[in-house]
Length: 489
Image (tube, rainbow, N blue to C red; front, side, top):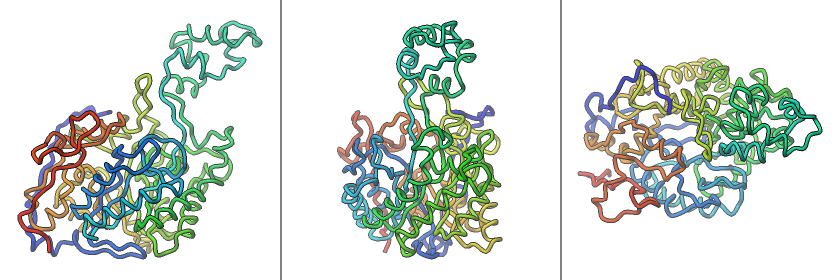
């Protein structure tokens, strides 16, 4: 993963003192929030994190249930289930919701969270669409099979346009790097060096051209299944490296009314949202996650994000969740046989900054942008709650987000992974028992390799007997249980 050249080392700290139980009881962080269909018992949030625990066909497993049940025992205000595919297509051990057969398994997650949180935590599911991406091929495979040979290729290697394709491929395979840059197009070079990746701008492909026709219905059908499964709402994933974020991006140059200028780029996002709202009704929470900044050359910035936020919230959102970065555009070149990972470049660092950082540090990097976006919403008389995440790990940071009107809900991702009981510990005056995240991004490294995601703070702690373990037997699958000094009434 990319790291800032300054390489300043930081350590997470409790900040000031943890609040007593009495102080916590009067803190805004633990006050209820109500807006439209959204009802939270407190203003804390566990964002979507992919744990790689589903079946290869996208079905729910016992490990999924344990994962979400463990977060629920910490009683945050809300939990968002991982990015869940809206299409009924192969996508590895990621949850899916693209067919009715997935509903019974998802119902089990809902029931488990209700039981473990004692009905305290609201549960949403993040709905995602993604385009095709292939692993980086070996040069022999790329030139031998994958490259679509063009007459220009034959000419470039000194052969007649009608030359036998196998002969052209053999000649291309002998070319060096500089020569290939003269012969291959930018996209062909990318497919060789990074693996083939579809874009929303690949208008020569019929299924890409038809995305605006397909996606509103697909998202709406998925949202209906989520409601049937018992979720409190859905979060539409319009962030990072995936389809909907790509439509919103300045890099979207489609010329069919769904790209180019700002309103064109917003069009599909609004149509998807409107289709979902129409399908599920206004008693079901519908939120969106967007990027406050794409953090790539030529990509969307804060001004775009602010305009997107105003447009989406103006159309009736129940909440807006903010992230940043995490794009394919600047990702590190993968090894042969591996797929490009959108959190390895500078934009990936901005999404998940680690303890090695620059002068700004890894904590709260998204705060100034979130404050700008929320202020723009309020100036437009839009009261949509804003969910703020990014390196938040102590009480002072969390209460500052609310007190300084940066956001309305505080999200803890890696910190919740490090200690799922952060919420109940702080709320009951036992914050000094919190295990602080070290921001080494150990978890992110596992995610990159599509391994079951765990935390280095707890994955070798087997002191509570023989907990379930990862497939290699070396790490535990859920955080150790915490036995509080006094139980919340």
